[in-house]
Image (cartoon, rainbow, N blue to C red; front, side):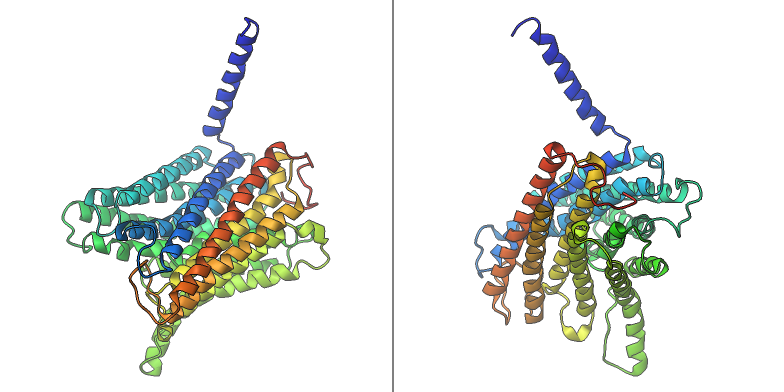
Length: 495
C-alpha cells in the first residue's frame, strides 16, 4: 500500500465507524423505528423457523428431530418470540418511525427513552432466547427460569419505554392547530395502542416481579416453576395480542384513502372502531379467561355472556368497523397506487381471523380451550400483523430512503405471506376442533389425522419463511441500491 492510499483508507474506516456509531446512538425517530422493524424482522425469521420445526415434530407420534425436553423448549420459545419478538415490537417500530412526521413534530418526544427502550427490548429477547435454550422453561433448570423471567421483565420495560415516547409525542408535540380528532388515523391508533399498552404491560411487569421473587425465594405463592406460565401466559396470548395489533388497523385506515387525497370516510366511526379494539385491555388485566357458559339459568348465561361480549366481542366489532370503512374509502382509487394497501388489507384480514378465533375459543361448549386452536389464533395474529407491517414499509419506505420497491415484488411477497399464514394457521384451527392438545409435540393421541394437519401447517410455516426471507432481501436491496423514485411515489399525503 502506498503512502498516499493509507490515510484514505483510515479516513474511510473512521467514516464507516462514525456512521455506525451515529445509527446506534441516534435520536431520530425514523432511524429508531427502522432499527426496531429490522430487529423484529430477524426475530420473525427465527420464530417462523421454530414454528415449522414444532409442526414438523407433531407429524409423527415419536420425536423426529428433538428430544422431549428440546421440543418443550421450542414450543415455549416459539410462543414468546412470535409475540414479544415480533408482534409487539414490529408495530411499535412502525409507530415510532411514522407518527411524529404525521403530526408535524420536529422530533420525537423523549427520543433517548425510545432508543433505550429498543435496546432493553433487544437485550431482553436475546437473553430470553438464551435462557430457554438452556432449559429455562417451566419445570426446567431453576437458575435459567430465573433468567427467563428477568429477561421477560426487561423486554417488557423496553416496550413500555417505546410506548411512553409515542404517547408523549402525540399528546404534546402536534403542530399548532392540529387536534387529536384531525390527526391521521395512524397517529390515533398509535395513541390508543400506547394507552392500552400502558394499562396492561405494567400489570404484566408487576406479575413478572412477583413471580420472580417467589420463584427465587421459596416458590410458595405461585406454585413453583411448572405453574409460571399459568400466571404469565395471558401476556402472550389472546386477547392481549389485540393490544399489540392496534397499529395494524391504523395502517390499514391510513392507506385506504391516501391515494385519493380524500379525508377518511366517516372518520369519527373509524376513531371509535380503533378505540373499541383497545377495550380488550380491561379484560386482559383481570388475568381471567372470560368464557361464555351456556349451562344454568338465564341469569347465569347473562353473567357469563356480558364479560365475554365486552372483552372478546367489542374488539372484534371495532375491527370490523375499521375494515369495512377502509374498503368503502377505496372508491375512485388508482389500482397502481393501491399496491401497499394489498398486504395491509390481507394482513388485517388475518388478524381479524385470529380475533374471531379467540371469540370462538372462549365459548365453553366448543371445547377448544387447551387445544392447538389458540396456537392457530396466535399464528393468524402475528403473521397477519407482520404482513400489515410489510404494507407499511412498502408505503412509507420511499419517504425514509427516496427509493421504492417494485410493485410486482411487493405483491409477490404479500401473496406468499398470505398463503403461508393460511396454511400455517387453519390446520391448527381444525386440529383444535379435533382435540389436538396444545403445547405437546409428540406422544399425544386424539381423534384427528395428526399427520395431515401438522404436515400442512409445516408447509405453511415454510412458505411464510420464504416470504420473510424474500421481503427482507427485497427491502434491503431496494432501499439501499434501488432506483431513486422520490419520497412519494404513491401520490399520497401524510407520508
